[in-house]
Amino acid sequence: MSVTALLVLAAEEAESSKTVFYIAGGALAIWAVIVSLIGLSRPEFPRTEGVTRGVYGISAVLVVFAMASSILSG
Image (spheres, helix red, strand yellow):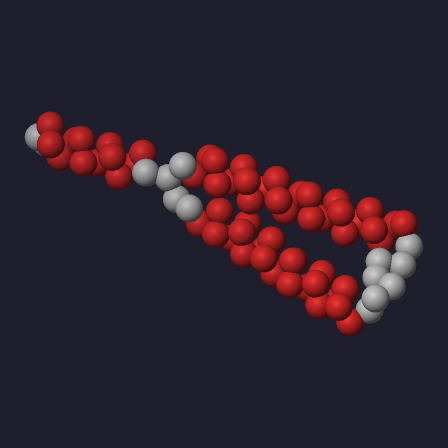
């Protein structure tokens, strides 16, 4: 095997996949649309403190996951 072939093979192996970022970003976008639609159709949403914390928590986890996958995928 030549040196050029080894370098090409190494470059292909080192290239990271962005699939995880696309999934995380898509999940965050879908979550944002769902929360927006619920908020627009129900002005009192979220009614209780527990639901508010849940929405904030899920949103924060999805944002952190999308950011981390973006940074790690290069």
